[in-house]
Length: 97
Image 1: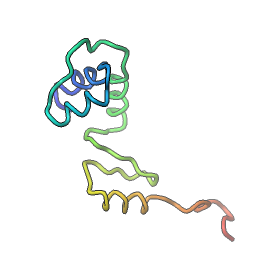
Image 2: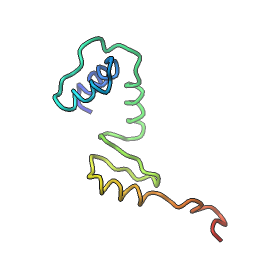
Image 3: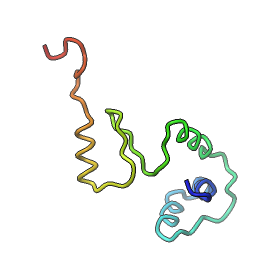
């Protein structure tokens, strides 16, 4: 995580319009102004990420436990999602027998 990530995340979280603030920071790098001291989950999310060795965004944990780190083209993401899903009852003793 880059050194300003937590402060920028808090600024977005505490902005009156989070969606607008997120869009602006992603498109222009403009960090929302105003207080960034509201109750927020940023520190808890960082602890969770460290505990689970998540150090890149986006990180997607698939149903089969594999991780996808970094952006993927939509077709590749859909392929991995389909690949990770087990049929209902798969692995259940006696299922489908």
